[in-house]
Length: 392
Ligand SMILES: Cc1cc2nc3c(=O)[nH]c(=O)nc-3n(C[C@H](O)[C@H](O)[C@H](O)COP(=O)(O)OP(=O)(O)OC[C@H]3O[C@@H](n4cnc5c(N)ncnc54)[C@H](O)[C@@H]3O)c2cc1C
Image (cartoon, rainbow, N blue to C red; front, side, top):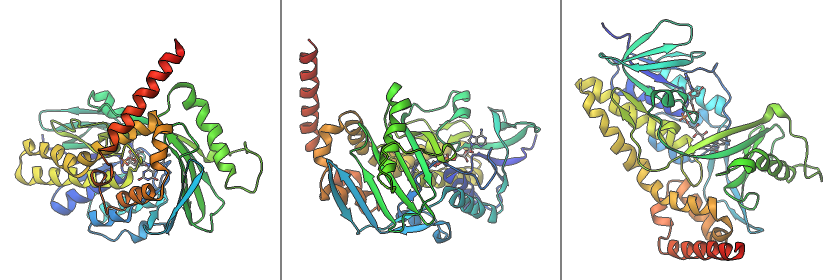
């Protein structure tokens, strides 16, 4: 039986749309179907900060998708403020940016259906069978799962990678921040950080980290309120946040090498573990991973060789995973022993290092001084020993 499509892509976030675009660009004969359960343009909880370096990864101009360019970054750590105006950062509104990327794919001939929730996906002799709620089965040679953090479909199939989860709470505030300053604050949480990312007509104010249990449920809310009050003309440390603008969401971060190719099904974007485990940056690597998956699918279609899809795992590791190995160590220390890491983070040099990695000028490998890790680990173990002694 001839499949209805060559490829079905599930999820039209940055990963899915960039994957669809790349397949059509590299192999224009491909019949590509891009599905999303949401109605587009759709809201996505996100700070929307992107490194302009992302432009290097795509062959079309991203300017139209950008909401504003932010030139000033202010970091707070251990009560001190550090400022940088050296690295401009792009801010996007995800409803607009994701719709823009999806339109790029559609402009090359990708077929897009929104309001299409994929409830089942199976491997078959010819490829895959995909079920969209309330519609007849769709057959394709390949499927790419780009469903984002929740990973419901991948879990159902038993192919969801084991990924560490950050809890994040974001408030979309409609009052503009006229100075267009970006704030990062490491003094607001026992793990992770708080942020205020400016938008042309508002601000994304949020807080996140590797929180568990009670801290996740109650801690984030009150800390976000306290952080939010810093940017308001109010002395109330617990202002009322309007529920419709408050969005809690998990962020699944890179947690080591994973299996991303399962027969005719590939995983890409956040569900493949592309999110930076230190900064939680996910948009640029989602686009990158979607492009890498798209290239391998286009090649497999051209050559009629499914086996070659496994090259995607290697390409993902080389472009994304390899450098994240360094970020993972730093992230672990930051999320478990922030008080010990803060003295290192609290400096102008650290801010410059963070921004140089985010801007693509440097890699974690160059910036995370491995010689300092034994020192920090030594501090962590003596801290743990002291606590055990104290408990006795
Ligand atoms: C609060 C918060 C703040 C963040 N801030 C930043 C930031 O400032 N900068 C940054 O780079 N990253 C940030 N991130 C991370 C970033 O948002 C994600 O990593 C990124 O969106 C991942 O892209 P993706 O394409 O993999 O998935 P997504 O963008 O999540 O897209 C997945 C798509 O799949 C669709 N879908 C899911 N299931 C199905 C199904 N069964 N059938 C059909 N469609 C389906 C969804 O509707 C969705 O449109 C933040 C995340 C959070 C939660």
